[in-house]
Image 1 (cartoon, helix red, strand yellow):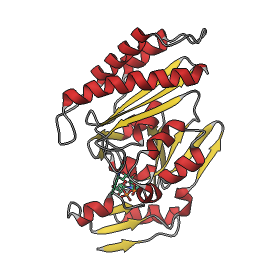
Image 2: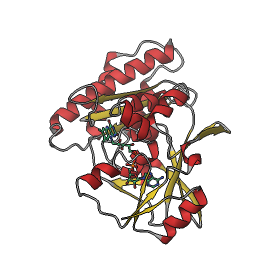
Image 3: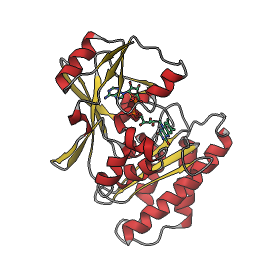
Image 4: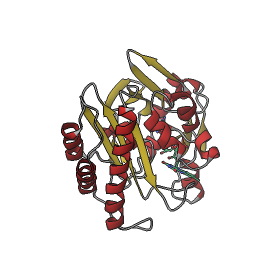
Amino acid sequence: MELLQPDDWSEALELRAAHPGALPLWGGTDVMVDLNFGRARPEAILDLTRVRELAEWSESDGTLRIGAGVSYTTAIADLGERLPGLAAASRTVGSPQIRNRGTIGGNLGSSSPAGDAPPPLYAGDAEVELASATGTRRLPVAEFITGPKRNVLAPDELIAAVHVRPTPGAQQFSKIGTRNAMVIAVCSFALELDPAARRVGTCIGSAAPTPVRAGEAEAFAAEALDWDGGGALAPDTAARFGQLVAEAARPIDDVRGSAAYRRHALSVLARRTLSWAWSEQCA
Ligand SMILES: Cc1cc2nc3c(=O)[nH]c(=O)nc-3n(C[C@H](O)[C@H](O)[C@H](O)COP(=O)(O)OP(=O)(O)OC[C@H]3O[C@@H](n4cnc5c(N)ncnc54)[C@H](O)[C@@H]3O)c2cc1C
């Protein structure tokens, strides 16, 4: 197997165009597992780890640009205040070693419905920046992932970055697993409140072929929350929100949990995260 190691971004894009069968790699926490289990046998590996700018993030005009090679550890340490939802999701990923190596871009590249980075990015209307030797394009993260382990990346493209604005209000993320660490989500839920726009963003993880927004739940909560008064969250509002989130899921029975359990768990996660976020917002 050939190992391609570009030293900078333009060389990476040229190599990608010249070797469309090469598998990109950053942390390798998904790629190496697939190689070791014989699930992938690419003709070449495109190792991006020398492209240091991929591991950088920046902020301009009220938007964060997070390079595809930004690790979970960096997201927690550097972006925790700006993106508490993404940081909370990052804290649940694997172990310290996996969080040091694993990246936001790699999680998007794998496009697993159970990935922990996408839900907060969906809830925050993030965009993915894709690049090839001929140019770049940006698209909503929800249009990037098209199915389990499938996405719209063209054979000559790489993920350059994610664009998302810093939190406009409270953000929460909650995940159910069979234990507290080193576990793939049975289901997860991300929530974002934007009091200025009176908007509620959500995303369900690991309970549909892709991460999915709970649109009806978002519209219901945006209408029902007492944005002006900041009064306590009514139990009926929390319960209805949980019910609408559960209805938006399309879970299956699998080794990690049954569809019925996932729906029930999501209604609980949704109620809890809304109540935590609302208390934080009104504090
Ligand atoms: C023990 C263990 C525990 C884990 N726990 C979790 C968990 O709790 N939650 C979770 O979500 N995931 C978990 N994972 C999965 C994995 O760590 C994450 O998906 C991680 O984000 C992958 O990032 P990476 O940089 O290692 O990606 P890599 O393995 O390097 O790549 C992953 C995929 O993305 C592609 N890719 C990478 N970078 C680019 C790029 N710039 N452009 C285009 N394609 C690219 C690769 O070709 C590959 O298809 C775990 C993995 C292990 C081994």
